Image (cartoon, rainbow, N blue to C red; front, side, top):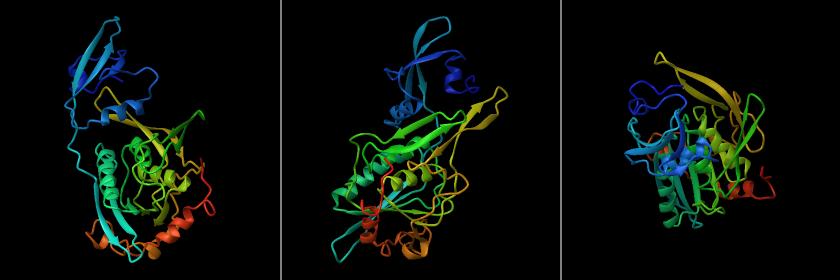
Amino acid sequence: APPIEKSAADLAGLKVGDVVLAVNGVETNGRTAFDIIDQISEDPNAGTVTFTIRSIDGVTRDVPLKREFAEAKDPVSYRVSETRSDGTKVGYVRITEFNSLVKTSLEAALRDLESQGVDAYVLDIRGNPGGAFQSAVEIAGLFMNDKLATDVVDGNGVDLKFRTSKDRVVVDENHPLAIWLDGRSASASEVLSGALRDNCRAVIMGDTSFGKGLVQAVYGLKNGYGLVLTVAKYLTPGGTDINKVGIVPDVPKDEALPPAPGFVPLLGSDTSHVDFVDVAKRLSPDMCTRAD
């Protein structure tokens, strides 16, 4: 598709048929679109991105494009919610959406909590409608090393496996993790939840999630409108298709979650009902079989 009218690419004179050889000096050959998105996301405050372009006539040039996007708000909030009588220190982390800031912000939050001696976690993604698919895979890599995060299967049956990164784990893998979901947790929230549960890294608590297991692409049209097409579906590492089904919790809401929703300060983040001894037991090899 041609560049959107008056976009940075359009103003720079990019045309259909131009080939992107490198991004910020790093060659694109052998890399996926997700790899390049990850690279650009490493510095969310950068004002420009430089593309090395080979035009249809064979001329190669560097084209710096100004980054323009709606202001993204930090979607991560966190605190040490309690220190229990047995010495367990609980960290509560809430993610409201998977935007361009989520991975960097969450990594900083988890490092801070680890430095404070937190050894049990609640990850609250209730009401989180999703966002960037690749962010869910990146975030899973903060909790587990080089594991299958999801399978993306296109209409031709081609299976593309996404794994978490190597050697980027922030949270000690022995620290139990509970994830809070509800019926509005969708898309990337479900990718993350499925990845962590099927790899025996987290126990799911709350309500059944929304059930959006489709991968969609947005195409710009010449008339200025856009077309959204479903191009693939994703499966959890265990091979479960959650579309229109959702992720069913391991522990129901009334047994572990506070009665207040997540957006209510303090009351909505009460972690005192979570049984981390039970969480650890559920995640042990005796009770949980890893997908990968």
